Image (cartoon, rainbow, N blue to C red; front, side, top):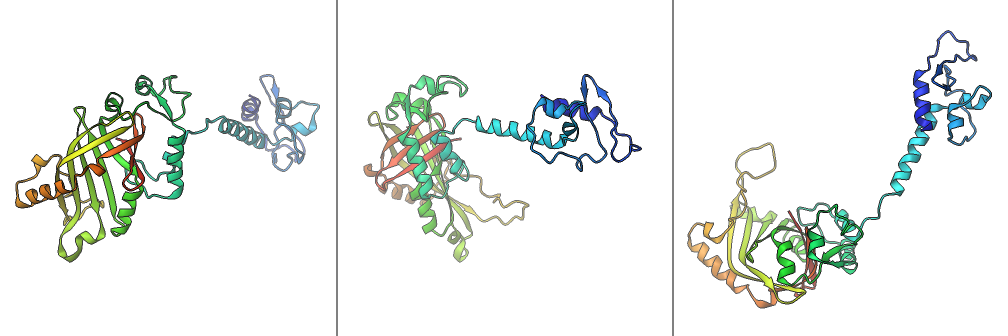
Length: 324
C-alpha cells in the first residue's frame, strides 16, 4: 500500500524546469506531500532506510525522506512481494517432480539414473486411494491433501477398468530407450489403446537411420499388435496378444516447409485394415511365435487418472505411460 501511494503521489507531482539546482517545488496530492527533484537519483539517500509508509511518503520535517529514491523503493517493495509469493508455493509431489524431470510428456524420454530414482520415489511414497476420490475433479478437496494418490488394488478389474480405458503413450521405459540407442539412435514411440470391453491395440513406431539404406525408400515402420487385457489378482494385470501386423512408411518425395513426412498417416488401426497379401499372412504367423506367457503378466505399481506404471519383470525395469 505504501509503495502504491508513493507511485500515485509521484505521478501527480510536477517539476518545473526553472527551479534552481538545490530548490524543490511542492504539490499536494490528496493528504500526501512528496518532494520531487530534477536530479532525484543524484540526491537519493545513501543510507539503508526501512521501507515504511513514513519513509516513502515523507514529511516536511524530514529532509532524508525527501531525497528517498521512490523508484528504488517501488522496486524493493515489488521484489519483496514477489519473494513472499514464491516462498508460499506448495512443495511439488514426487509425481510432479518426476514429470518435471522429463523433456516431454508425449514421447519416450531418455533414461537416466536420476529419472529412475524419481520414479521409484513416487511409487515408494504413493497413497492408495478409492476410485471415487480419483475420479473426482482435480480441484476437489478429497485428494488435495493426498500425496501421489493411486488406485487401491490396481490389478483388480473393477479398480483398473474405469481408469485404464483410453489411449496411453509410453514416456519412460529404460529398456526401450536403450533399444533405440543400440539400433542407431533413432526414435521409438509406443502407444497403447485400452478399450472398455477389455480389448486393446498397441502401436510401436520405429524410426532409425539405417531404415533408408540400400535404396529401401523406407522412412519408418509401425509394428502393431492387438488382443485383450484383464486381471490376474489385486496387483497384477495380464495382456494377451493374438494378432500382429506392420505398416511401412515410404520417404516423402514432396518438398514441404516442415520436417513432417506427409506420407506418415499413422499405423493401420486394426489387422482388418491391412490389405491382403502374402506379407500380411507371414507377419501374423511370426507374431504369434512371440506371444508367450512369460511376457504377458505385469504387476501394476501405480495407476491414477493419467498415469500408469507397470513392472516388466523379465528385464527388471518399469514402464511409465501417460494418458493422452
